[in-house]
Length: 364
Image (tube, rainbow, N blue to C red; front, top):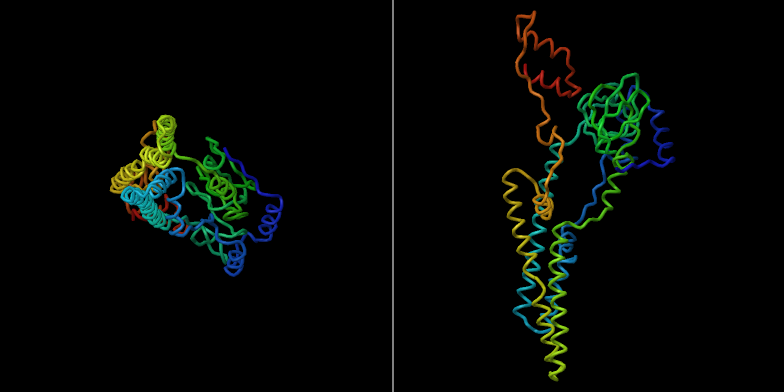
């Protein structure tokens, strides 16, 4: 569980801005000024140039093993071996880079398609806008099933049951009432309320948590396995090199010939083809998954997924489509099915983009 608190200065600054925002909502002019001042309501993405991404595949424990083998082959002037090892190094980097590049494009397209929307009071009217356009002081309407688009303070006497598991790890929904704070990324399980935005983007609790997650560096199980195999072979080769040197010294072998034997044995012990073979195998797995509309952003994740015993996942929006559809209309005292649908539509508000309301409108 990760709990992140805003600094006292940030709370004072944001609360001061929010308190001076009328409950009738901001004007478009004021919202534009605040958007320029505080930035979009989105987590910052560190853009890395494709060249740096490609060079990154030549840096790390596994590429280092292959590069050492290439350098030793060049020192021995075994040029055929050198070019073969160099080709394997480039192939291994190319497969990983291409998979990440294509997956990144697919994820970006999916992110744009699934952009979060928010119902906000602007210029005295309720509007549906992209959530990244929210600013501190905006008045938003929250309803059942909504993902809260920013850190907010609830207004009025209504209450909400909010699932905060994505942020705090709490398994049970938390009840929020007027005056309570609700946080970006949490899901409304019950209730409806109007709220005022107090923090957006990187200043939200979710933004602070995301910055900590980005700083965490982990080594995949795949990398650990490859390094373990490589270490074992290198240790064995070092033992053989030591034994060879001792025997050849006893036989008074010339030093130049002795060094050549030692380098050849060292090059032979480095599994230069193993990373390329494994990358190709996982790339084929990624292609098979892509045919099932699954996006693989890291090749190593395929091996990690294959070794998993239990997968814990939410249902709504992951295993299901998170979209309600209208089935049959059950008539009691009424005799006209269309009249019931019309009454339901008149009782709905299209601007709310509510899941139940939309199902009614689509059923007309």
